[in-house]
Image 1 (tube, rainbow, N blue to C red):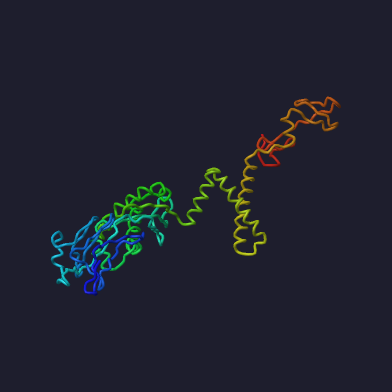
Image 2 (image 1 turned 45 degrees about the horizontal axis):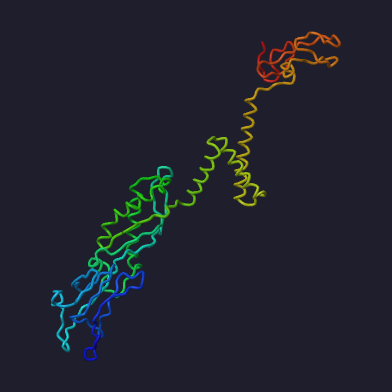
Length: 358
């Protein structure tokens, strides 16, 4: 490089060696100290695009390659060529480098829950997060619509504009799918593709391309997840109401044991729940007892095939009229046909259940 009358340093080579990972646009330092000659070499590396701007207007866009700046092979320079200075022509233009490689690993997430209508749970709120990647597809449009003339533009600057678009596309995809909350996890890939398709036009308006979209997790509210856990527990045990009541009673008793004195309203509520559970279990026991026919000792002995002598206590075979030991006449026993209770001779009604005797 040489100096022009000690005022400006003439740039023989214009290039950008990008050592950063998040710079999208870099303005080459052309100012009062440096000037571009009408013979400078422009180097544009792979995954870069160079733009020349003169008086706020984009004059030309250079794809990757090496260019010799001269009016012979670049016609636009004839319009921005300044007056000759010291025997060399200088170019009064600004040079911007745009990084066109894919920017990966960018995080997105729902800042606020998204409401959806679910067939199983009604209206529920869900949260989601994941990663995405993008790249500059049209450097000229990107500079006109988003970048402007800043000296430096980073990935975070672009991401702040893109996240609302990504979240909107995700909300639309979930709402239009009408998929149950329980089946969302099985459709992550389909949702991602839908978001890519829906947001394509929005990104193109800024000269960008959404390259990939990954949904890492979709979560339900904590109370809904707890309800699902409870349902799963019950499903493992049984689908019968009796099992459910036993489970509820056991849970209530466990909680009641933690608050034996019932010193607060919560303890009172747990105690009440335990009482209800125990009462229901007790009622079930009573119902079972009612459904079981009552058998008296005398009836049991009669059904067992033997009786007892009222005088000597010897065992007497069923149907025998006299005791084989002492010869005492055996009484004829009568039993209620309804409840099985022993009935005295000549009784017209059962003394236990009131059934009329034939």
